[in-house]
Image (cartoon, rainbow, N blue to C red; front, side, top):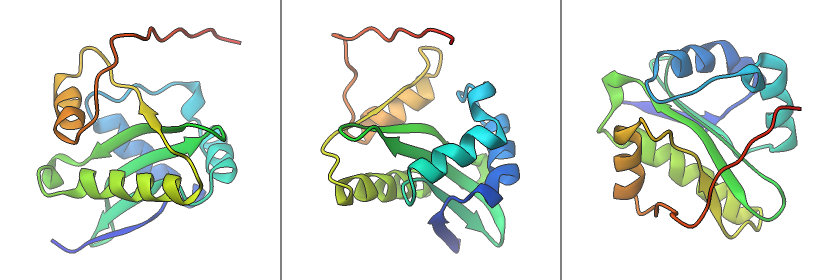
Length: 139
């Protein structure tokens, strides 16, 4: 396996969104439109990463920060490349980029109905927070 990692760019959108659409546990919305992702990448340069194998998109992680906390969104790895370290390598790159930007802590969101995702994050040293409730509001 010769997986190549690079920063995500707006030009990667079509391949990334297809990967996200086919990955279980990823929830997509209007916030994931091509224009919205391009804005996110522009606001958070060098923080999101992709993985390709022989030119095929096999992994992606969207990452950014608000100036004090980092956020990981939509980590996905193609079934063909799971359990080979691709997800961990993407996360490591995101976290290193956040550290380089001076961000000391990162949060992520996992659906309750995604036990595989929760298990991945817990194996990777992330802790489930029982003291917080996520609240959202459409604007």
